[in-house]
Image 1 (cartoon, helix red, strand yellow):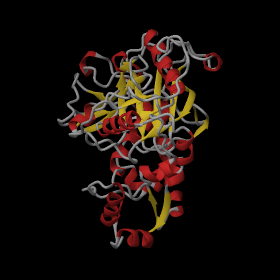
Image 2 (cartoon, rainbow, N blue to C red):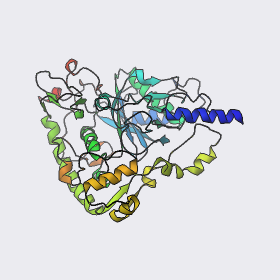
Image 3 (cartoon, rainbow, N blue to C red):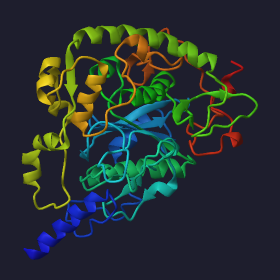
Length: 427
């Protein structure tokens, strides 16, 4: 009994420092495979890859949606556009919606992260792990810090995205095969939720809204092109698929150089922006006077209490429930009672949102209209698609160029590579 108690104490102590591969005493159910690092993809996924006309070692991209609790694996087809192969339910993620700010805050990262073979950890005590690469250039420029933020197995999280061991076995295999095929960097896109017009309207009172609008630019670019965007950082902000003149480079903390958006991309986004604005206005009417309450981690865990009890013998097994199911709408007057402060304007709403997340209130006003959400020239399109992975009919789409690497690392020197869209400019 004393040994078991000691093991639990060590696990909880490690959790305070973040996911750091210290679950040596934990006992959890793992797939029985001869070589987890070289375990091939199961037949069902190989069949899906073949069905979609993809090469087995073609490049991949990962997308995470916190609120929905989903991790998606996308893979390049022979036309160099990406299609979704599979999605997994995330077993556990800690904290609440919003980016990771500092070590020990239990937040899981949000943003765009290039993953290289260096980020794979075949010896993780969480069965297998892929480091997210946090902090990236954007995080460092904004003073954010933290270590060992991973996608891993064991279903236990303290700032990580934790899967079951069976799930991470497949995700690891996807990454391994892509690197074997020559991919240099896999793009991880981590979002708070699917950035549709309705979801953006529902979360418009969050103190993180301005940051999420920035992420949405990259989200939109992928939705339109079905190709991972080229990511850079300047003036402490993300910039996506931007052309610079005279070989100018991006300085994460310095002023942005003069940039232009490729005309083909601008044309493709315009139709989606119009559809987004209409959907956002409709959602604003639907949610008028309502404020979405983002649940705490404890409230999410309460939803899966019985599941946790059923696996009590697995010391590392600590799933978290759905943020969508645990969250709820509150009317403005209910929020006033809950926070003992009048909700009379944007600043007050920001204070209420900050109180929910135990973080400082935002210092800038949160946009609450569709017009404000389209302030940036190339942002805010929440594209509507006719079918999974296919652009809506009638919207011009840049033609794929098989000579362009489908994924580029954001950390690479910009002057040493050709921008993704420059090769399309002649078209």
